[in-house]
Length: 181
Image (cartoon, rainbow, N blue to C red; front, side, top):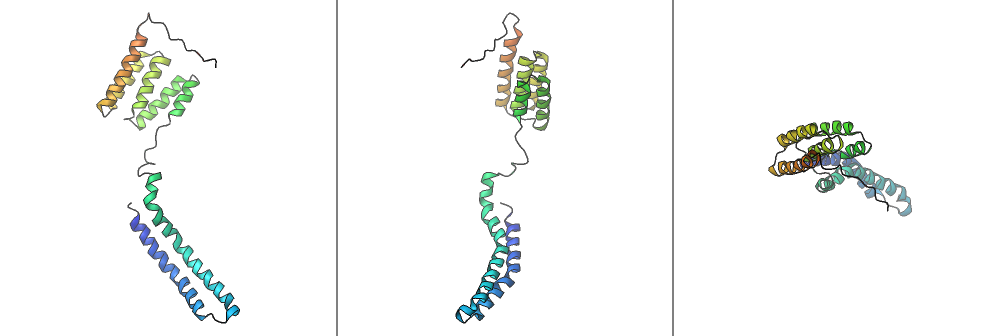
C-alpha cells in the first residue's frame, strides 16, 4: 500500500510524455477532411493515440493491480520463506539421518522459533538414531527457543512420549509393516 506515491508519480510522468502523441493525433483528426482521402491521416492519428496510450498503460495497470497484489503475495512473504522440510523427509527416507539432522540444525538456526524443526530433531534422534542424549539436547534447545507456552508444552509432550517409549529396555522395538494392498 505504500507504493501509491511512486505509482502516481510514474503515472503523471508518463502522461506528460504521452501528451505530445495525443495532441498530434488530435490535430491530425481536426485537419482531416475529404472522405476517403483523409483515411491515411486518420490512421496516423489513431496510431499516435495508441502510442500515447501504450506509454500510460503500465502505470494504470500497476495502479489497478496494487490493491489486489497483497492477496497473492502478502507483505513480508518473500522475506521469511517457509523451511523446506521435504529435504529432511527425503534424507530420512534414504536413511541419511545425520544429513537430516544437519539440515534441521540449519533450519533451526535460520528460524529459531519454528516448533517443527525441534520436533523432527527430537524424533529423528530418538527413533532413528537411538541417541536419547542427542534428543534431550535438541529438546532443551527447543524449549529455550520457543516463544509461547503452547509450543513448549507441545514439544514437552512429544519428548516425554518418545523418551518413555524408547527408554524402557524391556519394551520391544516396534515392527514396521508394509501394507500389501
